[in-house]
Image (cartoon, rainbow over all chains, first blue to last red; front, top):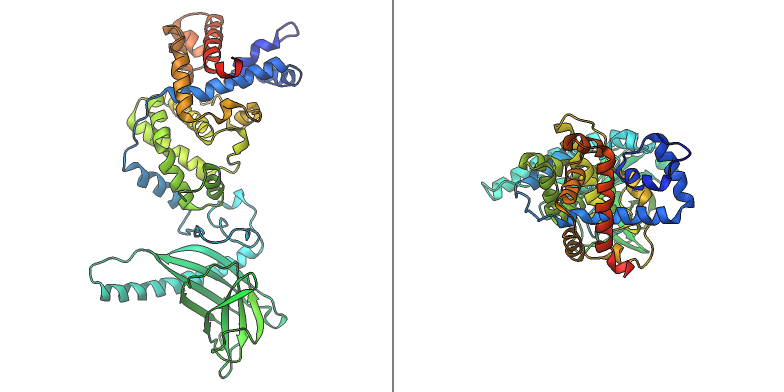
Length: 259
Length: 188
């Protein structure tokens, strides 16, 4: 269509409407670089285009549409609800796992450690299912007839060994929310068994502050799980130490794992 | 979530935070639904378009750049693409979408302190309604077919049984009138 004699300025509207041929599009795009009046016209056309819908009368969307739309979207993402709670500090994007499971693999490069995480996650889900079942029974016994809300993971943090001695240890921490109730779940494996009064202790770290989130012991199988009500503190990281006993309010032993 | 800006919410949506998507839904579903209903003229189709739009928000990787204009405009560009595409499929015609979001980005070149870029939606509504009064019936009809129902210029020419040059020139006239009365603040 386009030939040397054609006035490229006339293509402006067709260009915006996407109704040019490929050659016209390319020619006009080049032309834009040197024609300020076409740039201005294109800008104006775009504004008109963006303003056009404002003329419509607003109709209220049907109330039942929300559940339908959101359920369809989230069910495509599988069962992992990886929302971070609103008050959780930002700036942890380097080690956050949020999104890893929520996005199809081809969309985002999967970090190497995430394969390990999947291995961790499966037993964790079994553990949490068992726990949920127990919780459900307990609740139902307490409040017969009132169904408990499903638990979901609202924050998820992989834990890595920070100590040579525990190099094979792996695990994760997550915050599970059920209704308004939040619990911290820490799940680890490959740990050294505790001896005597020894205990592993979980610390919530923020700045230089540490707060105790609980202790657990580990048997010969190397598995360790801590489930605790979520303390009313904000934190950036989680650290785990091996302590001489379960009574400390400050870390005394060495750090074993961290986020 | 209520206190967050649209841009902050969209950023969280990119991080797959569900509450952020829910909040955007609450803020904009009426706008999206109204658009879809006007474009498709069918309630079930409008529901499906709303589904497509919010699914697109959830899966988009490019996100929204606040420097390029208002969130509502960006959202409506996406809505129009999907609604028009839907309408075209229904008509079993070309599935080509007229303005891709990438193209929208390309053609957007906002400058600082441009009153149009920061104009409130209410103000924009008043302005476009005012400008529309200057269009003749055939000009308004052309915009209706082109913008809302996604017909191409050549399709419109065929339907009206007139040369495409005539349709193009009517479009130019219409856009000129709208520009004159819509963008009067900048020019006047």
